[in-house]
Length: 124
Image (cartoon, rainbow, N blue to C red; front, top):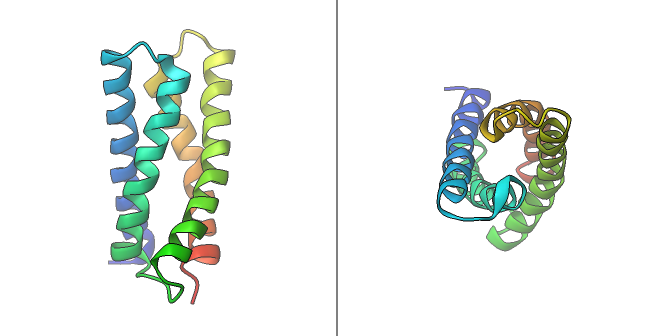
């Protein structure tokens, strides 16, 4: 299976984590769609790092702590982009369901994620 396909599958798992945590937080808390999304992004980021390091790219030679810090830095930058797209959609179209905005934002961030992780985190 190609690395891009494995990355896509890990991305789907991350998306399901993000969407599931977001839906759960919206259903059981008063956090609202903006704060709940910050928490769901953090959960998804952790899941994708662990899966990408074992399934997609293999662990780097940097050690888990340095690799995790680099992954976190790239993921935070991409998450800011993702969150801005998500928030922009909800503010521009208040009728849009938060999960629909999540889908659009995740799709916009996917290519950027692959480039960042493959070049800056798991490069050899």
